[in-house]
Length: 152
Ligand SMILES: CC(C)(COP(=O)(O)OP(=O)(O)OC[C@H]1O[C@@H](n2cnc3c(N)ncnc32)[C@H](O)[C@@H]1OP(=O)(O)O)[C@@H](O)C(=O)NCCC(=O)NCCS
Image (cartoon, rainbow, N blue to C red; front, side, top):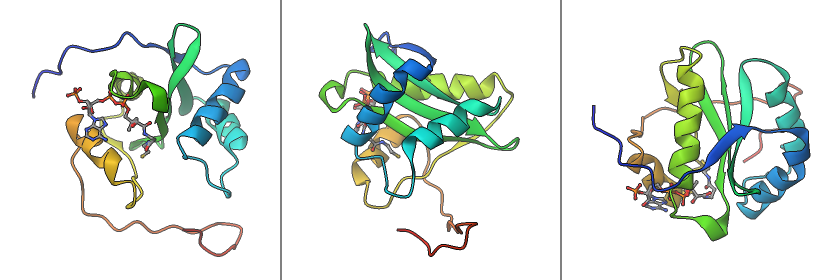
């Protein structure tokens, strides 16, 4: 196991509250993480409903500068909506919010974290590699359970 470098940032991370939702959605839109078929407010509401998932926000002062949606299915942990304010990149906030998601999962005895990266999001792959994530050869299958045709 390699030692993690000393953190570059002192991001204050906490579970999202209802008052944070407009800022969270605005950040996701700025980061181009929203899709027409995923209603972000509904995603947040579902993630906050039960004990197996959460939305974490990272603050620099009062401003929300980073987010992650983290959850587990009892077997694996997953993250979604990993986002850092585009004006605040390369300050260590991405590393810090991912560390918070990893801790959230460790606290629930989840041993492995997986995440999906869109093939066209090549820039972010180097970020995850820097954080010691390995690319795995898997084929992802998906199906909308209401019968609608598959989205891209
Ligand atoms: C990916 C993202 C979260 C990174 O956030 P960030 O705050 O800029 O990242 P950090 O400053 O914490 O960088 C952590 C490390 O990754 C490296 N890194 C970050 N982005 C990188 C990139 N595009 N290419 C190469 N390395 C990168 C940094 O150099 C840093 O290395 P170091 O700690 O050894 O110095 C941010 O670019 C982002 O929000 N992107 C848009 C949304 C997105 O694509 N999310 C992921 C969806 S799967």
